[in-house]
Image 1 (cartoon, rainbow, N blue to C red):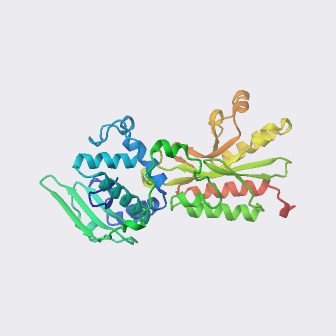
Image 2 (spheres, one colour; image 1 turned 60 degrees about the vertical axis):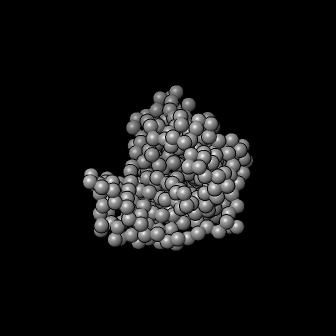
Image 3 (cartoon, rainbow, N blue to C red; image 1 turned 90 degrees about the vertical axis):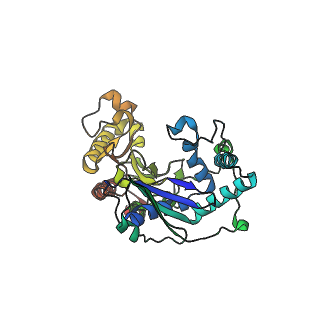
Length: 353
């Protein structure tokens, strides 16, 4: 959870029951600190858009702030409604919003554990690479509530703050959204998968990639010539690594890595359709990749003619619904190496002719 108090301090809160083995002395460095670093990479617009799903009542579920009404227009509007609830001025709302955005982007947060029991060993090990902020531990025990705070007062200088305070409607209309490029993809990746991305870039350069690409909203796209006379397409970009992934690999507002292999150019060539299918089956067996849409059973059985015709040609790492794409699991390494071997075998670039 992430929240702001009436002084403008941002609290990054990790909630754990005492029965959860993740409530241990490493929680500060292995969970809260990576979350803080991840959030600090977000722009104001990204923070505001990320808050939307939690402030719209239709999406909020049973837990919802009573002072936010149905017509809330954005995160700043939510701050204004919060301040009205507490009897604060609109100027105070503006200051609190600006402090919140600035503190998140600076990584200046209070890292806090919320639990049902105080574990003094966990509290004593509160170390991290935090440059600012402080630490908290709140325990709702059966007999009483315990709150511990190790606070570093870092006032935000008002003249440093330049916030837009845009509404969701305004932000949706903006056209200057960040698109995935070879340089921007790494900025939003989970730290556990950045090394994987670096290996992919190095491999493609060694293979002879000339750094040309085009982008859509989710990936940058590369076409490489093959020894079969048609190009193989590669999609590299972001996937949501939260919610659908195993709990051990979830990160807050962080992205996993898409490294998809696309046979659409083979499919478009009538003389290459049989070859396309053979290569796709090989990739499925060697690298645990699977097709999208009608080809989602490619790694389990042969496709029917109709399934093959309707398939768009794209494949992605897919073991099961909880183990897909690249988010930093150790087992992903062997699949990545298999993809590298596959591409090295089929790609024909100028420097290798």
